[in-house]
Image (tube, rainbow, N blue to C red; front, top):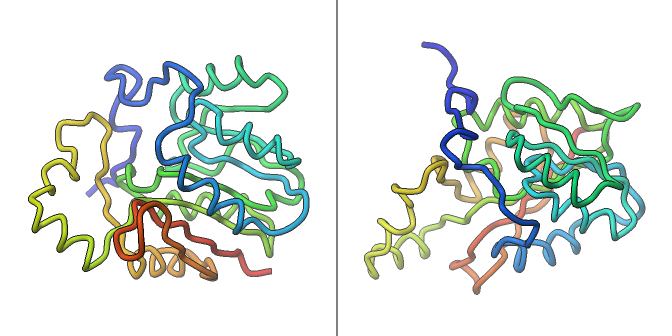
Length: 216
């Protein structure tokens, strides 16, 4: 059976990943403060993998980091480059292959917000990110949280239909718990360091923020 990748879907034609403005998304409000606390000290060469409209890449740049941004969406890359011309953005299918632009020695770290749950092949995505990170470098990614208590509450209040967003073009197709996310990271040779919840209270988190390293 052939490997399924995001490129099987013409997302630009359907409008699934077209971006209309450079405003932050809802999840930025609770994920970015957690990411800021988890980022290692110092100035880093960073890739925002799945940068969308460039908001997060610019946020990282304003904190003193050297930042590049990549996205599958050509409209997102175009908007990001037009609005943040001081940064470098490039179009890339990070399931099909590694990032097209990698600084000498590799990125110190890669940040990826709310991307992995949209991918048919998240393992290949992580494998390609791994190749672009320098030895000892880090990966920070976020994805919606799933766990026993939250899943039970969704069942009790009959919210699974809305949660799965079946009518949303380009919606979520992978649903991670802390255990499955950690296992996938370790299977792709990352050393897991931490997974923290963000948004809402414990066990009902909106998302989880994972920190892992490439062995040095």
